[in-house]
Image 1 (cartoon, rainbow over the protein chains, first blue to last red):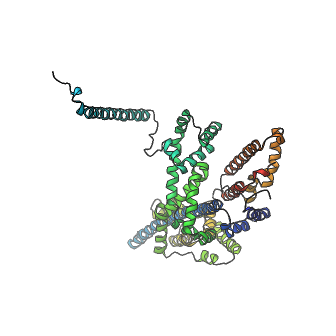
Image 2 (image 1 turned 45 degrees about the vertical axis):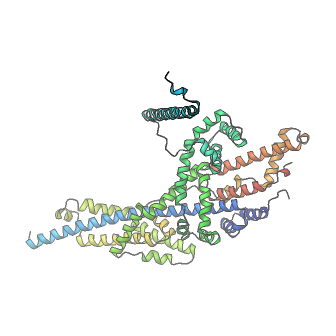
Image 3 (image 1 turned 120 degrees about the vertical axis):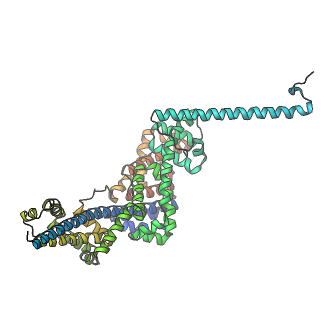
Length: 100
Length: 403
């Protein structure tokens, strides 16, 4: 053994999963074995997961806001059109009643 | 003979002198202080005239930075990350405690930059709370599991420690995180919350719901659900088209009804009742989108956004397979060292102390190279994970195996 690192077997096991190219399995391994990693590595793993999740959550919020802005603006246009249409209808009815 | 106050009786004389000296010292110091204040004021005015921004009052001095263990380490990280070879030499002297007089002046050039980064990091740090961790966990099963393992406080402790280092060593990633934190804040109590509230109010007032979308969301299988959602959104918006709908409403608003004259309406051959029915249909369609934006999940929002607002800007994400190429393994380190050793000449004739010093040099270079590669990937999840793995391997690596 050329390292004196007790966590090497853990890393080796992780790298075997990585070699298979299965990202979901690699993430699962990291979470399932989180507490077996040295404290410093634990902090880095937690931070990587957290910041990734934070960015995704913020992205969804931004997409949601963009969608809402678009939809609200068209909704307002439709209501404006409805209101104008209502006015025109009333005018037509008044004119009809007056026989114009 | 009148006695000078300076030749008073020997007993009272020294006390008198000390008093005079003290007064003189106080006056002198006060004069120096006044001079300094005035000098500072003039310097500030000159800088202002020259368009140089004023230095914030809480800018740390070099002494303050170096006297604080954490700040000092971060300052070193910043110099190492931002600087060229000059900074590296400076760093080496700083670490070895062999600072030269000119070094302090050189370091003081960076203290403003450092203080600014620390201020930004502190501001983001303050937002990384257990409440935020729990909020994020609601939509993220991985974070839920982590909270189960270390608690929300454990998450916060880890990320708060990481963020300061990120501010000095990975400014691009730090910028992204700051922006995400700002978005979360705005959604909690800022403009984005106001927008969301007004949509909720609108939906309530109009009795809007998103039944169709919600039915699709009820499909349990993830793959089937995504397909159903995409099909539904495409069916609705491809057929009628978001752009077409907008154009239709625009035309009704600014075209047919712009003049306000009935004859114009007659000219355009629009039947008012038909137009009302059309508008009601559009309203229902848009209403379903608004309703879904409140109740929908991430997949639905993504699908709707793609059709209505346009393809979101692709984020550059580094895959696991690409990121792993950036870090050396134990074996590749040993292989690399063989080449390194060859260039040194007669390795076997060196004493053990010299060998160790070359091993350290090699490992330092390899670590710098790996850190640089990871950083060049623009951060990201897998780059951070492999960075953690590499550091863990590096810490426990038996350098004597380099031979």
